[in-house]
Image 1 (cartoon, rainbow, N blue to C red):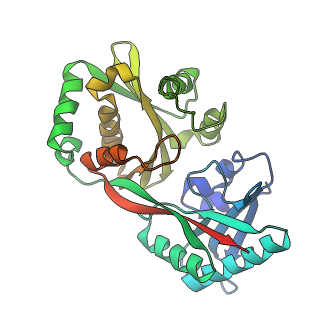
Image 2 (cartoon, one colour; image 1 turned 180 degrees about the vertical axis):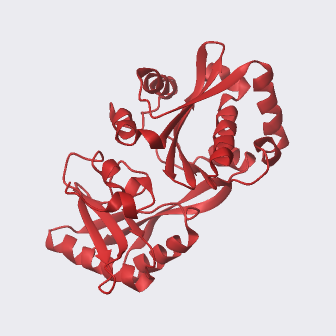
Length: 303
């Protein structure tokens, strides 16, 4: 990729050059909308060609289009119209755009939604996403009583959580692979891709581990998407320790990290199973630990 002014002008990690560069071995096409008057960047867009049409960077949870600064919906519509025309000229017949959860920036979400509809992009998937707004209350004050009892039970049994930043080691990836494999699930990232993500932006990746004595029993990788957002990227726990609800302490540790670092949103992510289908039990768990619901939309245009 050529040098571009993304890192200093785009607040969210998955739109930045260092993360885009590891999304694919193919070319990523980037479009930048600027103001004629001031020269300021108003919006950015990234996409790649694929076997089933063009799509936002495929390995990122979002990363297609983002308004920056004082961008209006009609300006974003103009950019999308231009991109549609360009993709069609390149022989494409479909473009899929993944957007960030609405809780990240409700105003930017509304701008993107109006612009996508005006440019002929229709919602293809609308996911239920949960997030915890970080306030002054402690974690055990926002969760349901049953979860509070489980949290206390794990601590009484001796569970303890550690956190480190930006280190990609075989323990973390191996443990998470083990958690997925024991359930018969496919690991959500290609081999060694997790290490490449972390190596590209080590200061943005945090690994929380729950231990019982010297054995890890649960682990979560969180991503500092921006100064104000921490995103739950992936996690897992060993099923033989399910009775201790070890994941609860991971989210408590992430919540307290957010309070300490003045992060306003803990994004818990969408609730789907390993096949991509809605998972009501996961959605209920997120609601029980203080999660509020918002939308995460994937748009698609055919031409």
